[in-house]
Amino acid sequence: MLGVWDYTVILTYISFASAGIGIFCAISMRLPWAIFFLACSGLCDMFDGKVARTKKDRTEDEKKFGIQIDSLCDIVCFGILPMVICYKSGMKHMYSIIILVLYGLAGLVRLAHFNVVEEKRQEQTDTDKKYYQGLPITSMAIALPLLYVLSPLLPGRRVFLILMHVLVMTVGALFIVDFKLRKPTVLELILLVGVVALSVVILIFIGRSWWVFLHHTRFPMAIFR
Image 1: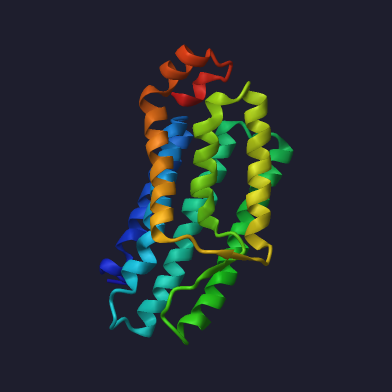
Image 2: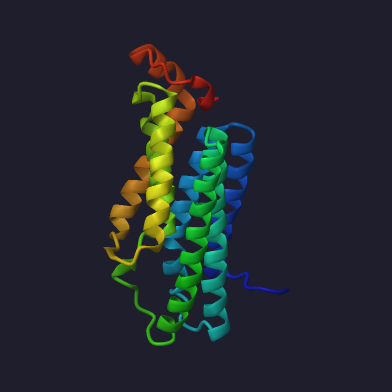
């Protein structure tokens, strides 16, 4: 069979599958589920590199394959899936679509740059990097779910959409801005993504009735179906 099919890439493949399900959920307007699967993809991405590095006898071809498949997966999980979610959430004006396309392009450029730099780095060392160069594309797996989790607190759909536009523009721009960002520890990442995923699960199962009862929010509850 073509490709690599051992345990070193299993989390990457699961992440892709999760994103694929998330895209179908978003198209079907089951947006909280789409957000949940986005967070799941982020959780898998946190550990795929660490799992891969546990195999000490990887060939150079396997290492290069891992770099390529990780970035290809990331553009689907944290590029395409967020674009579909945001579009189905209401970013449908011409300027909104331009913002989404530029977001996707910025993520694509970042990943291509990462592939070049990471391949050179792995030729010299197998140790983890201590800093990100620019904002990692996986950050959308935290930023977008947080916006959704907090959305019932907002006064209306207009404010929600404004914040979504600002979020997409800001995160996309930071993908390609050259600055150093300290990599969070594994425990910090687990706690953050875990809290987000748990919050989205709560939103899926009890969010609608709970927020309507407590806050009588004017936020359009149709997005939580």
